[in-house]
Length: 119
Image 1: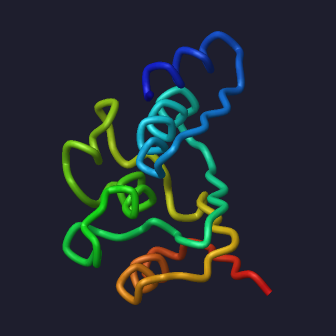
Image 2: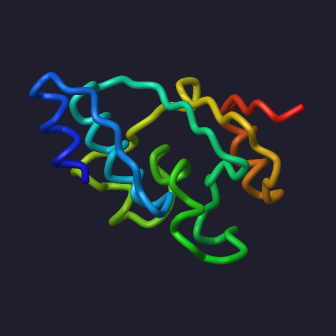
């Protein structure tokens, strides 16, 4: 996914990636960050997906996408496309979060990731 995303941006396209699982965005974020250098992310989800392997209640990678993109988690995923981190905390905006695990919330607050909760 990272390579396809990078190639489409290189060809002048704005890629729109639809996946059946949140973990698909690990590669698309990596590909976009590789091409753009510095980028922002608007994450529309009731789950911020910022768990770490040691704090995740389920252990599912699809709940770790934001943490991985920030450079935390399994090294083989963190280094997707050969570099890390993909994003900086000040360029991430999580919108619609309402189901956040306590360690996940503490992780996001520690790094100053902006979270917008539903009314």
